[in-house]
Image (cartoon, helix red, strand yellow):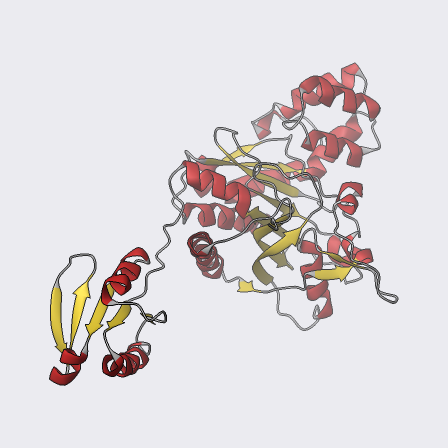
Length: 406
């Protein structure tokens, strides 16, 4: 028997219906903020996918067999492909450009709880504004999207930082390879502390540097930051814009984000207990458009994975319930009733969902099937009902039956 590929997931009808309800909730949240839905190809050119994303992401791309001169791979994230889309129409689009997507991505990595090789993501991109207000709107939408599913401030927390501020602190230690240090900081909660410190030492930090870094990463009050940096003021403005969401938010200087293209505000969302991987993450990447060949444009966005979110929703008993039953199941007895049943089905489908027996079963088996599949009503018609020009309607929830004239 064939098995699904490792790190992928099958969606049976009940699971897909729950997924669709989450996706529809996200769509509504994004549209309330004025975002418009887009989609990009699953495959992109390898040079595009590897542009300024760091070495780790290059190892995660599913590379397709080379055909002719084309080198293609499955997208490991979608910010770069969507940015390519923006660049293609950069001078036609009114600013700000606010796009969202709910789509699949692929990464060749070791599957874990909350991490798959093929995964769905909800995300947004904002092109044009470089303001703290844009960063705040991005984060506010992420919070509202989760709240729309019933999650509260007791369930998740948004950890915010500014990569430029963190970079200025690292430079104050007279360390130049700050991109390497960023990646190590991003691993802080994912590996043991002694292993984390060992990696910092490999990146040229001495014991004194590591102690200063650890002390800096513990700061929660921006007023206690002594690093001279314009980015500190920017972060303060973002926090001020988010004052209505303050119960969801905390400053966390260890939030660095692994991708190399981030330039300013960065954030990640975790469950309050720290039980799962990051639910969502994003930030500002003002150089990405120009790095990909467009005219420099301030940009920011986030991605929210369905896999980890699903674990949290299951734990909180907030996973949407699947309602797969049709409005009407039409059960018929005999050939004359079959023709009439087909007429009724055609008319009812103009108003709702209708199913009719395709297996030639007797009435008892048809009723059993209607009950198992969650039909809300059953319309029963036999030769006697055809002669009398009526149909019996049974409400499957209450058991009440009524005769309705055809």
